[in-house]
Image (tube, rainbow, N blue to C red; front, top):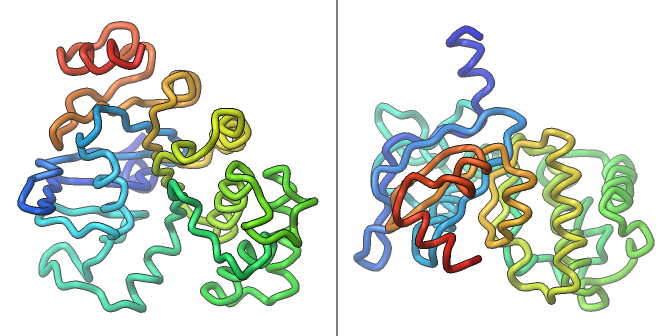
Length: 259
C-alpha cells in the first residue's frame, strides 16, 4: 500500500496530544492512528486517561496541544497551522463523521425510540422525514428492537436504551463509532445484548474505538488493544500479545487485578 493509500485508510489520527483538567495532566503526548474497519479497545486503570482521549476525539474535551484528525479533517480547529477554533456550526458538521455512545444513553426522554433514531438525520443531515423513519426502523430491527419503536426511554430496560443509542449513532452514517464504557451502567444480565450488537458491528468492519472493562469482549473482538496509564499509551498491540505476554510492568499489574 502506498503512503497516500495509507493516509486515505486512516480514519482517526492523533499526534502529540496533551490535555490538562483540573490542574492535572490527564493526557501526555498521546499519538495513535486508527485505520478504516479496525476495532481498537482502550484499557487501563481508572484515571489512566481513556475516557478523556475518547472524548477529545469528538472535541468534547479540548486538548492543550497536538492535533486530532477525523477522516482527514482537524476536529475543533480550522487548520493545523493556525489552530484557529471552528465555529459551532462547522464543529457540528465535522462531528457528523463521529458516532458517540455514552455510558448513560443520553436519549431524549420525550421521544419514542423511533423518534430518537430518525430525528438526527432529519435535523442535521436534511434527510426527508419518510426516508429517515424507514431507515430508523431498519436500524431498530438491526439492534433487535423493531417491536419497541413506539416506546419511550422510560419504558425500556437499560440494555434496550443503550441499543437505541447505538442505532441513533448509526443513523448519522458515521465514519467511526466511539463507545465510552457502554455497558458500565447496565445490570449484568443486560450486558450481553449490547456486546452482541457491538460484535455484529465489528464483524461488519465498522471502525470503532471502545473504552471498556469487558476484557473477554476486548480479547475476542479487538484488532488492537491500547493500554493507557497516567495519561500515556504504554502498549499498543494485538489482543493475544497484550493479554498473553504484556511487555510493560504496569500492564501486567493491571491485568492481574482484573483476573
